[in-house]
Each structure stands twice: as structure tokens, then as C-alpha cells.
Amino acid sequence: VIQASNLERHAGDYAFGKATASDLRNAIKAAQEAGELSTRTHKVNRGVETRGFTTRAAIVTERRMLATEAKGRGQAEPVFDRMTAARRVGAAQITAKRQGHTWTSGQTDATIGLLTARDKVVGVQGYAGTAKTTTVLATYAREAERYGLAVTALAPTASAATVLGEALGLRGDTVARHLLAPEAHMSDKETVWIVDEASMLSAHDMARLLASAD
Image 1 (cartoon, rainbow, N blue to C red):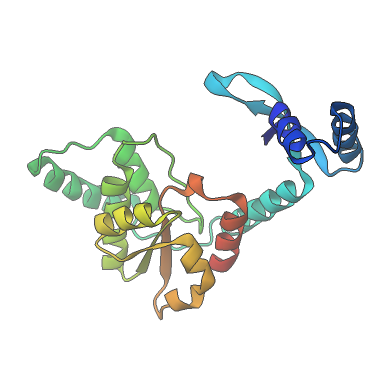
Image 2: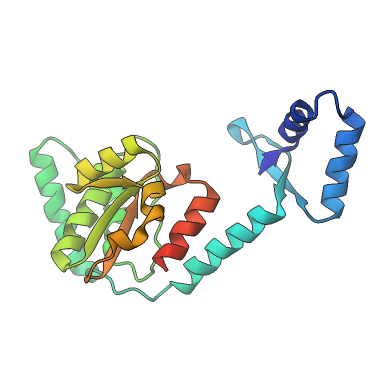
């Protein structure tokens, strides 16, 4: 969603000396009437809501992503049943405790959720610095490989891909590079793609990634 004031400001910069403020307002109104722009609420700092817009293309992209996710619900074979998953996570927690690290309940629930998931697309949401990569994703990747799955580590940036790869003991790659040649990551095994820092991806790239996985 684009904040209305930002749209007007960027349009003004682009059309500097060629269009008046009234011209810009009329153009935005015409785009709304044509269905190219749709009014949306835009949240800024601390949840304050202002007027915003989204585009027809953005809506199409998001609907395509949601359709792919919905189609994959209940279509995956879980790595473990819940009891086995809890046991494996418990073993990981004991190892972490010996190294001076303690798991949170959120990390435990997220890891068990991944290991028992029956959906083809699964999201893990957590605040920055909550050790999602080194606990949740690392444990899931290790158990998935033991189960016989091939694991691919992806992230939006090279630095994030390196961090993910080191945490998982794999070669991390950027999503952009992966999308150039997804067939290079094909395997005879069932495969899982782990995407860290997924919220940094553009909707366009996420849609392409989901379509490629599908």
C-alpha cells in the first residue's frame, strides 16, 4: 500500500515543471475511476492510519500468491507426528541448554509446527533477534534432512543468505539467483525451500518463488 501523500509527492517530483498539483489530483482521481488505483488504509508509525492506495497489478499478484498457498493446504506429508516432533525438539533444547542457550515457548511451538505441517506453504513470524534462524529453522532443516528431504536455503540478500546457510550448515543462496535457474536446485528427493527474512522480498519475487515451487 502506498501512502497517499507519498504518491502525490513522488508524482510531483516526477512531473516537476510539467504538471500542477491540481493536475496530479485529477490524475489520481482518474486512475481510481479507471480501477488502476484502489483506496486502502495505510498504517504508519505506531499503527497510526492514513489514506493510501494500492494498484490493480498488486492486487492480482497477491491473489495469485494466496491461491497458490490455499491450493497447497493439507497436501504435504509431515516430517513427524506431533509426539515424535516434540521429542526431537526436546533433544535440540537439551543440546542448546548445554551450550548456554534456552528455548522460548514460541520457538518450541514454531519448530513443532513446521515438523508436523501438512501444508505446502508455511510461514513463521517472529520479531528480529528472536533466534528464529538458529533455533527454529536450523532444527527443522536438520530433522528434514534426516527424514530424507533435500533442503535449499534462500534469502533476499547475499548477507542474509550467508547467515542462513551457516546456521543450517548449507550453502545459502539469494532468491534472485535461485529464480534465474530454479531447475539447478531440483533433486530426486522431495525438497523443501527455506526462505529467511521473507518479509524483505517484493510481492513480485514472492509470487514467482511460490509459482516456481508449485
